[in-house]
Length: 87
Image (cartoon, rainbow, N blue to C red; front, side, top):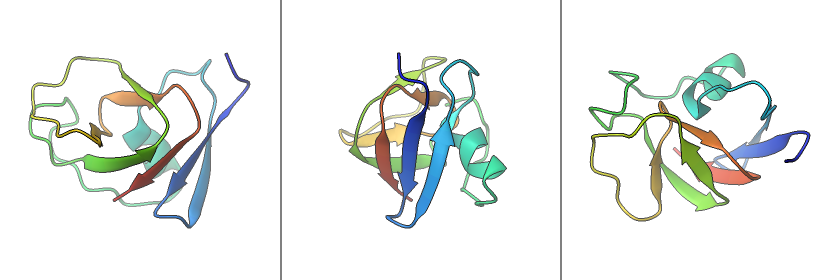
């Protein structure tokens, strides 16, 4: 396991995730001062959907919303590698 993972948002925001501190991608983005779109925070609605350009995520809870190939739900996933996303 890496010490930290890098999250690049829209090619311009560079965030760091500590894998020893379980937190969702949505929370990481909010802590960095970004304002990601969301509604339920539980993987039901899909409003937090982002395009996963590069890297891998793991789901903390199984999402019920439909996830297209190449997308992830920020409210219930966490990075398991360096990732790049587009909002």
